[in-house]
Image (tube, rainbow, N blue to C red; front, side, top):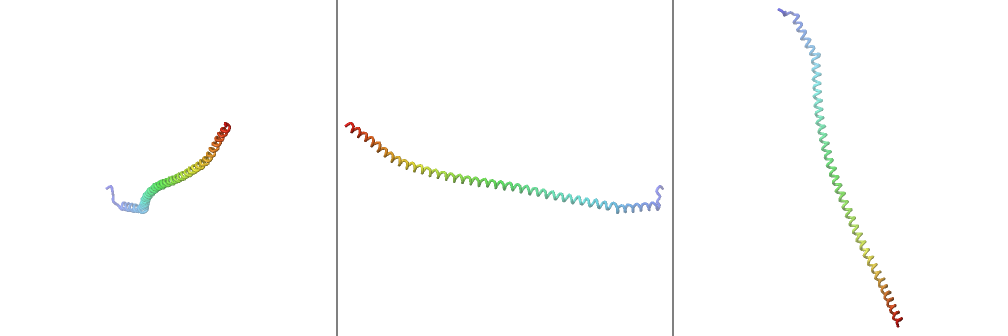
Length: 149
């Protein structure tokens, strides 16, 4: 028989089993635990990164919506300001036109009054001139009549 079963083989097999058991206790279990801890750490970091990414995406969406709302608000404020400014402008133009028309009316009244007073003065002067002219003409006729006599 090629393989003889003796006590050395049994001792060798037992020592091999003890060696494997000791290797398992000293190397494989700690390395397995380290590998398991690293695997858990990587998974937890991956989960944290995933949740952080979700939070970042939510924040980005929130900020985008806030920016959009701010743009809409600024547009409405701008439109409101434009309307108010336009209204003020129209009021000032209206007031200015009213003031100008009043001033125009007053100026026209003054011109008419001055025209009337000037016409009255001129009428008085025309009457005086008419009397002078008639007096001179009549006076010349009297002189002519006297001289022809």
